[in-house]
Image (cartoon, rainbow, N blue to C red; front, side, top):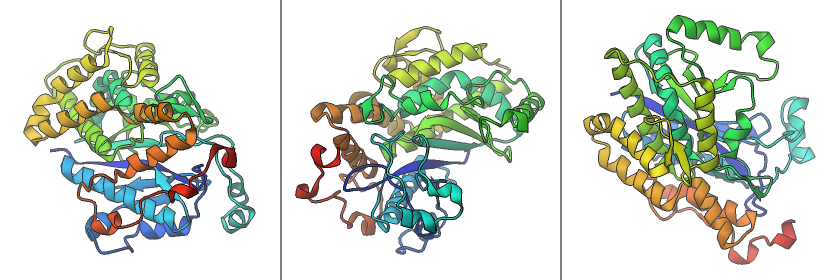
Length: 400
């Protein structure tokens, strides 16, 4: 059984005006060192929290796990820790692939306390918030061979995760506007077929050469090997609104990695899709999410989302059976197809009351899923989960 872990990028917001807002680093780091209540000290102490460059992201990196149940609990505890750290600065942590409302910059007082003049300004453009899945591989060669075979299935993973349909307080045409905007970087997007670990290393040296890094600080392909070459990292997904969706998506990805590794050992070649074909499938997935057609990796044709997702589940079914995760995964995916992923839930909230503030409030409640415990410590659930009292909720006139 392959080990895996995930990292999430959470958006800190001001709970009064529901806009993105900056955080100071020190309290977030404190909660990432396991200094809160004594529930599940092992998971808590192994969960790392950090803050983005401008204080506009909370990075949550959970410990390595071996099962879906463990990973689900880890994600919920990580989100709860991030939220508690944000609360110490009168903020909340929410899982949105991109901000719904414009960013609130640091106050002059807060900016002065942060290190370096570069940190005293708000981001020049809104940040994006992703969900990164890290799956163990036995060797760099196995990892590269899996990369060559998994690439045609990445659009389905993106569609399942889509959680960024709004941009600058307005609906966009994309279910994952985050992927659309991030794919413009020269070192982002789908990769070609590498063929061998040696070719992978050659291409990575080219992409990370200083002359190639002037427009992007790091290589950020949709899927790539980690710096240590010990894990295969799938980086294209939006942060999921629902923690259970996130855990199941990572479990599907782990099973997919295992299936592709077996196909390589059996001598099955990778699907000969060009970069342009994979990119077109990814853009279709970013646009439609679970509410339109996707390109089927089996037939190469645009098909109903449900049919393509069933193809994926049938492919990984033997591995899910071996791990005893079939029922859990299939039930959660059925819920996603019926009730929607984060993108559809944001749009549904907007249809009920067409205002971006209502979308953010719905996303906050969905992030922490207050209707179910799912093993989250009672010390966290006992806190005040409501955003504010009803009479304190902002009106459109008061926040603009």
